[in-house]
Image 1 (spheres, rainbow, N blue to C red):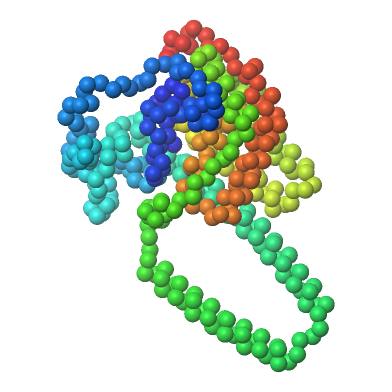
Image 2: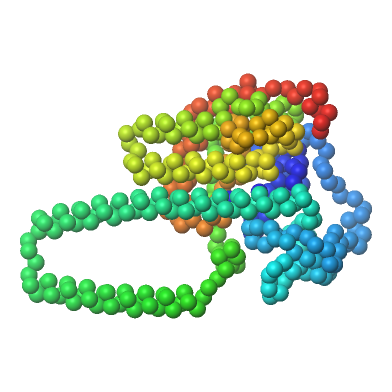
Length: 387
């Protein structure tokens, strides 16, 4: 649920089937947000089509080279064994370090990274984000289970009240119910034994997603209100065109925003204890995602020197206690596709989306404060020289 970034672009890692080319525009402005307002680019693209593309394909990685390779949602150390060109595409036959050779496979160049300190750091960040996803998943399931247990208990209490009002059942009916219960129990035990046998036979690797799981993966979309989309467009103009920076630490940090949201929800009499617990877990998960993803996916290239300075000034503060509402809004643009790979059941997804939409409503209600133009300042000349 994580390389230097390109201006007006966010770098996105491969998460089985979802990969953004670093050259691909991620303007959270026009094309992605579906607005008619299309803003001109302020920089020349970092790539171009030349006559060299018609020349024979050159391999970026050589045989025997130590590399890093995406497999599923994570990055692993690997070695390039062979190379080939198939349908005008460079392919590499890789062996994953420490894995059985049965996992050796042909992969495209887009799945491979140079074995550098920078990419090793990227590997660690991606693993950290994956672990955060798993933690968030467990918390949501626990909250969902509590709600389900409460509903089940209420249903049973209702049935008991109904039974106490009804007449005493006859002896024959009682015996019949007992026999039916015994038959049902026997059938249930047989089914459980069958399930155990199946589980013993099939032991899939939990870290590898099957092709069927990938193809049936449910796409999770987080709908942003139109007004919030406009703030993202304005943000892109401020950063990419007007060369402005967010004032940091923010007047209202992500931690403070979510904290005030929780305080408001807890004061509401309509919120049950179980729902309140679920909201707390979701907000905690949002902060974890934000802390892990900010550096690699939520910053424009123009903001990176500022990020480096902030790290030196506040080495012990997490990003959620430094950055504010507009960066939180950028996170919600990226969050949906990532949540699709957390393997949450439908009930957990609905609970999560309900909480996220409620947070977005809170942001919209306080948008004049959280997304004010006063939250930006023009970058000084010495800052521009660092780029």
